[in-house]
Image (cartoon, rainbow, N blue to C red; front, top):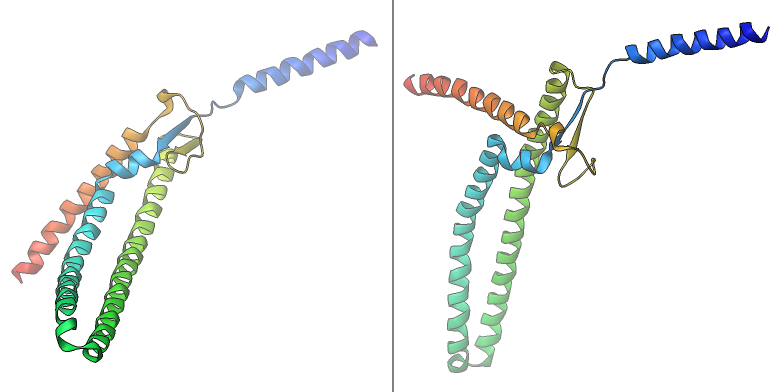
Length: 190
C-alpha cells in the first residue's frame, strides 16, 4: 500500500513537473517614460507649439506691462508737482491697472495650461495605446514604465525597449505628418 502511494505521488510529481516546463516563457520589458517624452518628436512639437504661443501672447502682455511701468515711474516724478489729491487718484488708477495686468497674466497662464493639458493628455493616451499594441504585436506579457513616476524600481538594461518605442512612435508620427502635407497643399491649390 505504501509503495502504491509513493508511486502515485511520484507520478503526480513527474506529471506536474512536465506541465511546469511546458509553461510559456513570460516576455517582459520596460520603457523609460521620461526619456520617451523627451525624445518623442510629437511631444517636442507640442511643447514648441505652446512655447511659441506663450511667447507671442506674452509679448503683447509684456508691452502693456512696460507701459504700466513707465506710467508708474512718471507718476512718482509728477506726484510731488501735482499735489496729494492728484497723486491719490492717479495712484488708485495705477493700482487698478496693476491688478488687471496680474489677472491677465494669470488668465493667460491658465488658458495655455488648459489647452496644452488637453493635447498632452491626448498624446499620452495615444502613447499608452501604441505601447499596448506594440506589446501585443511583439509578444510581450508585460511592459513596465520607469521614469518620473516610476513603477519599476530596478530592471536590467537588456529589458529596456525605450529606444525601440521612441523610434517606432517617431516613425509613425513622421508618416502621419507626410500624409497630411499633400492634403494641405491640394486644399491650397483649390
